[in-house]
Each structure stands twice: as C-alpha cells, then as structure tokens.
Length: 361
Ligand SMILES: Cc1cc2nc3c(=O)[nH]c(=O)nc-3n(C[C@H](O)[C@H](O)[C@H](O)COP(=O)(O)O)c2cc1C
Image (cartoon, rainbow, N blue to C red; front, side, top):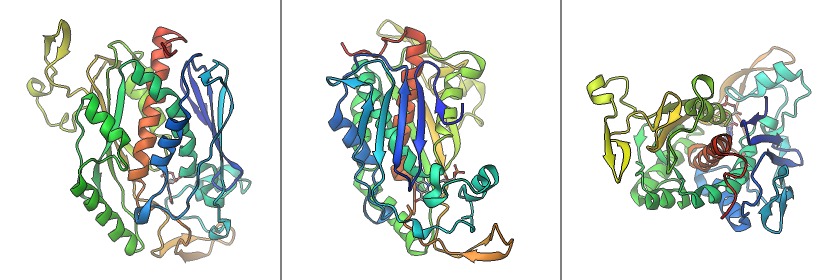
C-alpha cells in the first residue's frame, strides 16, 4: 500500500500542494458515527498557520464531504473529504533546483520529471490537512468510548518546553490548545526560538509527545502488526518525521528492576505501577496510556544559501529558498499526530471489535 494505511479502516490520502486540492478517502468506517462539522473546522484551524512562527500561505480549508455522510452520520460507505487549494504561488519553485533535504530530488529520481514539483507536490505538508479532517471524523467517536488523545510540544530546538499529564481534562486542554502547550511562558519561549531561527533565514525542529488514554487491554496483533508497528508506520508517513519512540525515554539506561512495570490492582482492575513500556507489551495494549514521542526535523526550505545541483545541467549552484515556509513544523504537526493516532486506534478497535465498534450510542 502506497498512500494508505489501516487494516479494517483504510485511509488513503491524495492531492498536491498546488493542484486542485488535497483529500482523503476513508473506507471501512463504521456506519452511524455522528459527524460534527464544527469540530472538523476547529481541528483544521489548529493545523492552519498562524503568526510569524508559520508559513505566510493562508488556506481557508473550506473542506467538502463528497461521500459517505448522510443526515449528519457516516453511512458506512467510503467517506471522501476534499479540501480545495486556494492560496498557491507556484512561481516560487524551480523545477531543476532540488531543495536540500526536501523530496524534490527523490521525487525526480522516482517519477522522471512527471511529478508535480510545485510546492513539493504530493510530498507537501499540505496533504496533512486531509489527515486532520479524517481524524476529526473519528476523534469524537473515540471520546464517546472514553478514549482521549493529546500531543504536547516537548522540545523546540534545544529548549525543553512541555509535559503531558495522562488524565482526561489535561489531554482535552492540550488537544484544544492553539499550540500543544498550555503554559504561557512555554508558548512565548517557543515563539522566541522559532522567530529567532526565522530571522536568521533558518529553521528549527523539535519533539512532540502523544498520549492516548482509555484504551482497552488487548488491541494490536503480535509481531508485525503490533501497536508500535502500526502507529510508527502511519506516523512516519507524516512529512518531516525522523524518529518515533514509545514509553519512557530512559528505558535504555534503566536496570530491569527499575524499568519493569510492576503489576498491582486498582479499582478491581490489573494495572501497572509505572508505565515505562508506554502501555504496550508484545505489541498489544495493556490498558495503561499509550505514550510515544515523535521527532520532527528542521524545515528543509530556508532562505539561507545552501548548496544544490541543477538536475538538468549538473551544475553546482547555491539556492536560497524564496517561497512561503514554516520556520518550524512542530506546532502544526501536533494536531496531525493526534489525528493519525486517532485513525490508527479506530482501525485497531475495528479489527478487534468489528465494524460497529465506533457507531454512536
Ligand atoms: C504540517 C507540515 C508543514 C510543513 N511545511 C513545510 C514548509 O513550509 N516547507 C518545507 O520545506 N517543508 C515543510 N514540511 C516538511 C516537508 O513536507 C518534508 O520535509 C518533505 O516532504 C520531505 O520529507 P521528509 O522530511 O519526511 O523526508 C512540512 C511538513 C508538515 C507535516
């Protein structure tokens, strides 16, 4: 599968940065999920650029549900959402000069010049708007089942900023916050770090931490379709993701006696005293919060001069990228992570409990 993920619920993305638009096809979704159009719009707003810390490209994201929803509920038929592109400026892109660390060179090698290179084409972060719209279909259904997801900005550049609590109120607050941070000081520090890189014509990366609470024990399949494998496969599809790790970030240095999550009983249920495994053992959820960290690299397109090669003439030249770009992808990526995590969880619940698992009560 190329542009798709999921076993029971297949999610396929399509579109280009400067084509007619971007979109998603969700096949295998349960019938009877209440579709909250205001929530979809709100989630898309959280991905949209804002202020000096984001690209100047401003898209209204006026999405259209093309199929699969009737009278405000999913029908169970393939659900297609299309988001038109309205604010493109293709003159900023040169077909022969690949931006260092963007996908221009690899796309040319694979598609022989037939690729739509404008704005990164099909490799653009713009496609993630479609993932956010898809996530907004399943997030309310998951919340109805007591499953909550939130992603916080843990680090931008070298600065440690946020932390995530694993309770419902804290996750809802972080999920609804503008940047995946609830502390005003951390927000202003994040903005300073990003604006400082931008004013140097440069960019910066960072780390995000995602937590999912309320999952039943027993989701995931052994070996190659474990929870880590399925989340990692989908998360690595998000452009600019370079690392993902699960559970405690100290797991490699702790002795077994400290690393092991010891069992105990709470409210009549078997739980663990610690959660160093990030809620997963043997690829299967143990009922504790699923926790993972995602590393996002610094944005490739920067105005600082860098070396590149003209792909037609093989002449070595310098390139200063002139278009509109995010000096940091991290604040916009966090809602994409919530959305992708929600889609993977929805898929795993459907595999285990059947195609009505997410139907509204
Ligand atoms: C939400 C989002 C926004 C992005 N914005 C930009 C951008 O403005 N400029 C840019 O060069 N890359 C941007 N990217 C990253 C590129 O799309 C990505 O680095 C490129 O496709 C190469 O893929 P790779 O980094 O996964 O190898 C963005 C990614 C995401 C998820």
